[in-house]
Length: 322
Image 1 (spheres, rainbow, N blue to C red):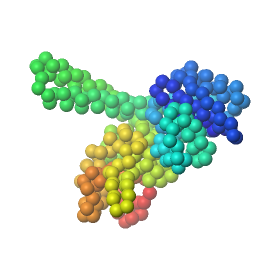
Image 2 (cartoon, rainbow, N blue to C red):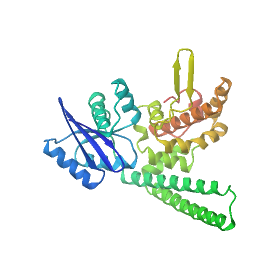
Image 3 (cartoon, rainbow, N blue to C red):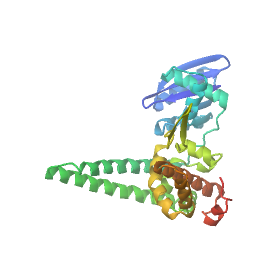
Image 4 (spheres, one colour):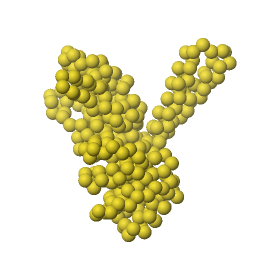
């Protein structure tokens, strides 16, 4: 039995495939809805199902945990793979019910790998990392508002808001450091990541929080696709149009890698040389930054996969290939 689930903020739509039969239903995206789903499956004599859903952050994670705890197999996949599968079927209908059916067919045809639930500390870290990103976004918005002509009371109010947000960010950073320091596994992974020039506290904590099982990807290319750091090119006859990023994947990881990539282009012995070669080949600045972001992510994958600290000499002689 295969269960395709299209998860939304307020509800989720299900498509249950077994043989030539399909059953559909929708439920509230809450603990009440989860219980109704379990009862719905039980009424159809479903003991164990392979459920599949797209990665939609916190909206899908709670349901995934509920199904795993209930003894079911769960796959959480990149929406891009489901979209490509739908295109191969020439699917044109775009509704929640149709999406659930598409995900169920994808699950039956492709047998995606089971999802490995993050540990309790990894879940806490993920929430802290996302809260920090939200606070940082609010601070940038407030700082941008200061650039407009303002009366003194408004300027003073914005300045106080910025100070408050900066205090909150410091508190979150302290909680992140404490959580990682108290967890031997997270502490060792952060140590390995920070041996890579260009990766500091914020990047390492974001990678550990947003991709807790990064080392389980089959290779660096698969990880780059998950994050949305694969180059995209369109060809039609003699016309060629390229975009510097596919922009499908984990936006938080892409955002946090941008500035470290620029730093790595100057200080990382591997990436600085590589960036120079790309520039000599006529690549545009944004393409070079995107390529360095991608390579930085692959290096992170490499040190976590191997359990070895970054070694420039090991990478420079061509053996550091992931």
